[in-house]
Every structure is written in structure tokens, then in C-alpha cells.
Length: 106
Image: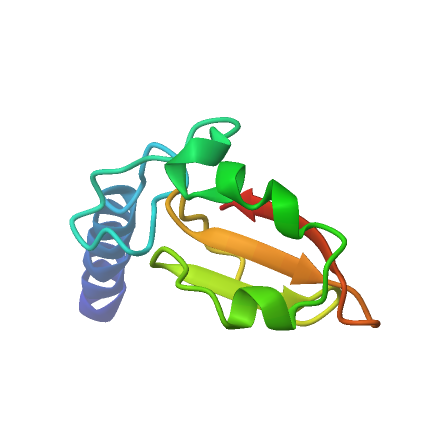
């Protein structure tokens, strides 16, 4: 019986601890304090994607030689990438022919 009560106390403590971990939505992982919460679409100016329109349709080597804002990632469509949301990260996607297909924040 004593073991059952101890187990119940441990279980309730675990539930209380996990309940405190709940948040208000996805959090920007580059924000260790967890103060930035993602909400809806992001303006292209937040990460510099608004300045990348001229590279769409060009070879990826062009942006690899450019000075890009930080953080930024350049990746091939279909490649595994992290799914964490960062409104300030510039993402540049290219296809199998190494042609840039889109630039966006996230």
C-alpha cells in the first residue's frame, strides 16, 4: 500500500511538472528565453527576402557568393531541413538544376 501511495505522489508530481511546460504556441528556437512567439505569415522584409526577388530563376552560385543576412540557409528542395520557425531567417530554395525557386522568411 505504501508503494501505491508513493507511486501516486510521483505520478501527480510528474503531471504538475509537465503542465508547467505548456506554452502559448511555437517559439523561435533562436530565442532561448522563449519570448518570441510565431504568429501567422511573416513580412518578407523581416529577413531580407524582399531583396531576393532578382535572384529567383538564377543559379544558386549567385547567392552563395553574396553577403546574406544572418541567419540564412540555402537548400535544395526536398532536402531534410529543421522545421523550427525563425521569422528572421532567410531561406533560399533551389531545384535539382541548382536554380533558385523561392526566397522566404521562416
